[in-house]
Amino acid sequence: MKLKKYLYKKVESTNNVAIRLIKQRNQRGIILTDQQTKGKGQRKNNWISMRGNLFLSVFFEINKKKPLSTIVNLNLKIIKKIINKKINSLIQIKKPNDILINKKKVCGILQETIFMQNRKYLIVGIGINVSNSPKINNYPTTFLNNYTNKKLNRLELFKEIKLLYEKNLRSFGV
Image (cartoon, rainbow, N blue to C red):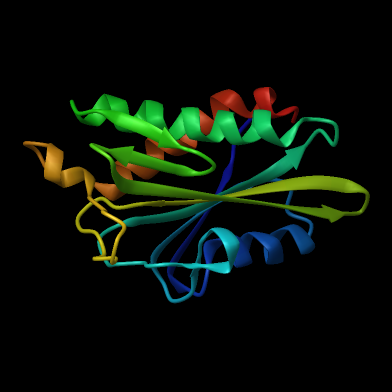
C-alpha cells in the first residue's frame, strides 16, 4: 500500500497538516516539511524544530480495536530500525515515545488519533535530529550526524521511513 507524499517548505505542524488532509477525505499519506514553526511534543510540549533536521507525519486509517500499546511499540520499532542501520552506537527506547543514542534524545514520536466518518485514523509525527540538536536544560539531546563518518541526508531518511511504513501498514490493521 503506497503513501501519498505531501511536501512543504514551512508549516506550523505536520500533524496539523495531516488532520486537515484527513478532513479533506485523504485516506493515507506522509508529510515532509523543511521547517515547522509550532512542532508538537508530548503533553502539549513544543518540539523544537531546528533547520536541517527531519520533520514528518504519517497518517492512515487503523483498526479501531488495535491496542494503542501495540501501535506505539510498532512506531518506535520502525524508527529504531532505520536509525540502527545508520549508526553504530547504543540506541534505546525511552517510553512512551523517545529514541535515545547513548542516553541522549535523538528522536521524538507523537501519535494522535482522530475519527472521521466513523473511521479511526492514526497520525504519527516524527522528529529526528539529523544535523543538530537543541540545548535543553536537564535533558541531554544529540543528532545522528554526530555518530556517522558520512553525513546523513534527511531526504534519504524520509524515503526509507516511507518505504518501511508502506511495508508495515498491514501490521497497524489497515
